[in-house]
Length: 404
Image 1 (spheres, helix red, strand yellow):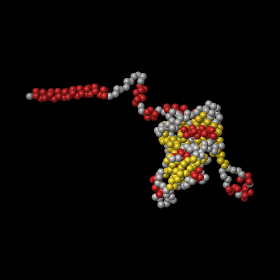
Image 2: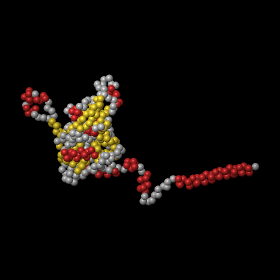
Image 3: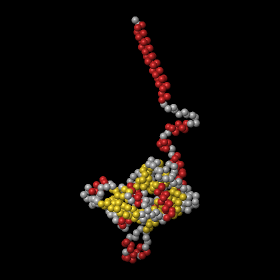
Image 4: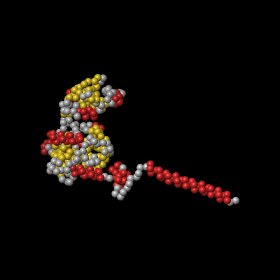
C-alpha cells in the first residue's frame, strides 16, 4: 500500500528537478547573449587608470571639484592688478551770516576768511595695460582727485597722473613712472563672451586687497539705462561674481585669465548682480584717452523713452493724460535740450522718432547706439511722427560737452 505513495513522491521530485535544470540552462544561455549586445568595457591597465577616471567625471564636477583654473587665471593677471587711493580737498560754502558787516565787525575780517575744508578719500582698483606704466580704471575712481596713489601687489607705491577721463563711458587712464618692466594684464576679447562663461573678479573691495571672487556671466548687453545710470552710454556684461565698493576699475577675467571686462557698477538693491564694461569698448576708449586725453561723443539733445503700442494705449486711456501719443513702436521725445542739435532741427516734445537714415528705430537704446556710432558733425535723416503726420528732419550731431 505504501509503494504508490512513494512513486507519486518520486514523480513530483523529478518534476521539480527538471524545472530547476531548465532554469539553469536558460540563465546560462542569457548570459551568453547579453555581452554581445553591449559595448565592450574599457580595458584597464596598470598605467591607464586616469583615462577611466576622466570618462566617469563630468565637466561640471571637474570644475567644481578643482579650483586650479581659477588659481592659474589669478596667477596670470594678479601681479598687474593695482590698488588706487585718491585724495580730494573740498571747501565748504561759507554761511552767509559770516558775510554780514555786523558779524565781521564784531569778530574781525580774519574770521570770515577762514574757509573750512574737508579731506575726502577714495579707494578703487585698476590694472596695468602697458609695461611703461599705463593703468586702466574707472573715471569715477579718479575724477576730481587732487592726489592719486597707485599701489602694486608687491607693496610698491607710486604717484599716479591722470592722462585722460571719459565720464560717458566711465573710463580713465592713469600713468605711473615705475620703470619699463611692469607686469601687464593680458587683454582678451568681449566679443566671444557667452552667457554661462566663468567670470572672475579681482580687486580691492572694501579695502581688502587682492580679493578674488568667482561667478559666471549672467547676461550680455545690459544697457546703462536698465542698470539705472542713464547718463552713460554702455552695454554692460552682467555677472554674479561678487563686486563691492573698491572693486571699481578692477578686471573681470575669463577662465583663461584674460581680461574681458572692467568692474564698474553694482545695484545697491540687489544681491549677486554686478556690471562690467566690455574690454573691447575699453580698448578703443583707452587708445583715444592716451592720444587726446578725452573722447568726443556726438549727441542730439533729447530725453527719450522707448514707446510701444501698449504703453501709448495706457497713456491715451488715462483721462488725466496731458497728451495723446500715437500707438506705434518708436522712441518718444520727453524733452528737448535747449540750443541742442535736436532743438535746432525742429524736434519737439511729444514727437516719436521712427527712423534714422532709413533704419527703423524701436528703442531708446538703439537710437543712442546709432548716435554714438555716428561722426561729429554728421547729418542724420530722422523720420518722426507728430500727431497724425510724419515729418523728415535733418539733424547735425554735435559734441557732448558734459556727461551730466
